[in-house]
Amino acid sequence: MLELSADLATTLRVQQFLYHEAELLDRRRNRDWLNLLAEDFRYRMPVRHTVYWKSIEEEFDDVDTGMLYFDETKETMTTRVAKLETNTAWAETPPSRARRMITNVRVKEDRGDELDVESYFYVYKSRLESTEDVYIGERRDTLRRAGDSFQIVSRLVLLDQTVLLVKNISIFF
Amino acid sequence: MSYSNQDIKAMVDVENGIIDRRLFGDEELYQLELERIFARCWLFLAHESEIPNPNDFITTYMGEDPVLVTRDKTGKIGAFLNVCRHRGSRVCLADYGNQPTFSCNYHAWAYSSDGKLEAVPQLDRWYGRLKLEEWALFPVAQLDTYQGLIFATFDAEAPPLAEYLGDFTWYLDSWLDRREGGAEVVGHVRRWVLDTNWKVAAENFIGDGYHGFATHQSAMKYGITNGNRPPPGKAEPHQIGTVFGHGMGGTMIVDPDISGIHYARLPELDPILDQYTRDTAAETRERLGPKADLYIPSHGTIFPNLSFQPNFASMHVWHPRGPGRIEVRDYAIVDKAAPQEVKDRVNWQCMYRQGPAGTWEQDDSDNWQQVTQAARGTVSKRIPMNYMMGLGERIPHAQLPGMIARGADHNQRNMYRWWSEYMRMESWPELMARVPAMERSY
Image 1 (cartoon, rainbow over the protein chains, first blue to last red):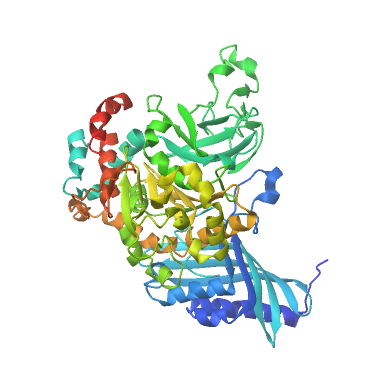
Image 2: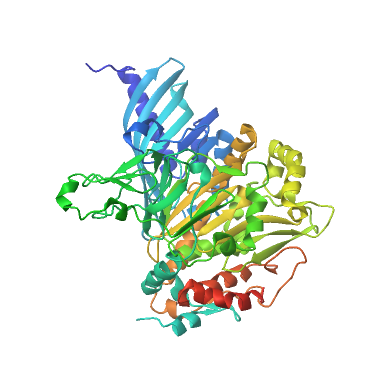
């Protein structure tokens, strides 16, 4: 038996919103992306380790007490965007080319004003001549309804790698 | 191509600041480094706070050799090749955890957390030839700790750790021993890869204060500073190189009314950190002595591959993976005695700057990759590299040890001078016989 937490229209709307977000970032429209973030936005990407089965609950570091790659608010994200706009942030100068494939979008809970949404991502970044970075994992979002669209209230990003096989994370996803 | 000691000596000209580009790309030099540096020098394994309890373990590397670091059931720290003594499968596959026994997946040979071989299935089929006590996990030759940092070496003839660290110990004290209980790491280590030679990273942290204004300008423009901002005229950047190739860069206080203790972290960026630094300054001064007022450590490297950025509460290890690649391990380090709120804020300042997403660290990647790539060019590698900055400048200091100068390239020249020594030495005793004469030049 398959239980869906939201109706078809809501699910489609959420999915299209996440594709729209991906398009803004792919097209390097970072300021427009910032406008999708709620004022109380939180963004966290914890480190992940290989642990034995008995410790599997701890394979990600605790987001409050452990180590993360990103631990952001809207303000700190805005500073990151401003930094990139200097055109002297060498990790993105010259700019990379990135494409965000967002998939397996599911509404896990619809509370009316807010929804919990999960999605998978496969983000490809190519830089200079032959530098390639790939980021794969899962996002757990809370979205807040805003008119016929949404704002992103919080995002937890869970990468599928322990040693990140990338040289940096210079883009957002 | 087979390099003689004479060839290697010619690659590093400390007097004129000229270094051979092949250091960053040559496969044979890299293999020699694995033999003569990574199999001989003291290498960082872990911080004690990563394995606080009996039977805790972490896995890491010494050079390209996988290593298992444990605290056995009595609390004693040990380090062993993470290589089963039977065929060589990896005995421990997890990054960290707690268990009293490690059983190899292949044939189920079982080792206790002190490395002893406890059980071999079907032992009778060795007809008495297998003595378990002879087939324990291969241990490192020496292991020791300093301020919670666990180091080990595969070379039984290496001098004791305290002697290897030498004058550098004071600089480690200045950020790892500021308060009772010392320091601890936050959470678990961050890891990622970079397409760069390990020495490009090590030399950047040992003394490249010069690159900050250019590489990291976009971060500094938006207030993501590197702290260390005494009032103008009260302090000057200084590099300090020590025997065995270590080095630290930072700021020398030149006005006695100013204390370096206040600026040693990023206090001016956060009122709570500022208050914490003021509240604990007396304790720090009592532990470290008045030298703590004189110098603000900013960045440094313990040769070969452990780097620090104390003002970011940050520590990095550069594990070599070939002449053109490294695996980076990155830690945040906080005072154990600090209130949780202070630890969280220090950790956050570190996370925002360092790591693969760090607003400082991410902008180093391309630079280091391009430097390393240049070493592959047939013609490029014939052209030497310029390490001439600050040549001939020495500023001895009455109270602070080491070879001191004002700016970049000083520590890099010292680091490569010692690289050249390690690459040519026959053994540690042979090198140690020459050290007293070398020390007189510091």
